[in-house]
Length: 93
Image 1: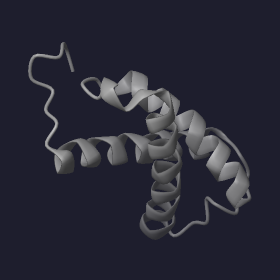
Image 2: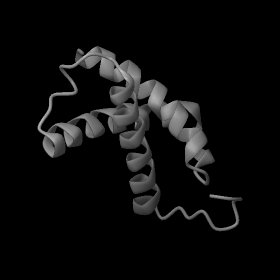
Image 3: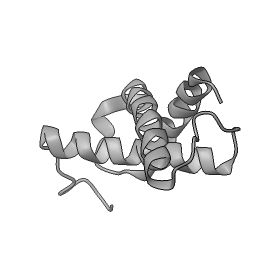
Image 4: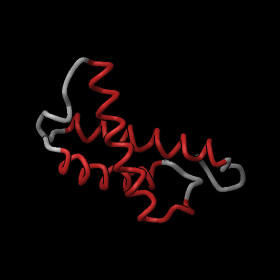
């Protein structure tokens, strides 16, 4: 799968991460898409390091989508931690 496909997949993953991670509603749709693109690339890199595979070069399948969504969630959580945003008083997890 090319880098362009990972960017598109990251945009979708970022949109999904916006629904899965509560307490970061201030980013908006565009912010989540950008974080999702970064997260998909980070998730693809981490999957290649941890599992000794090449998910960026592989086909678009369920595992690619899961890796991209997990990467997007990780990036959103890390950005929340770095910027000091907390989820206290903003509803359920």
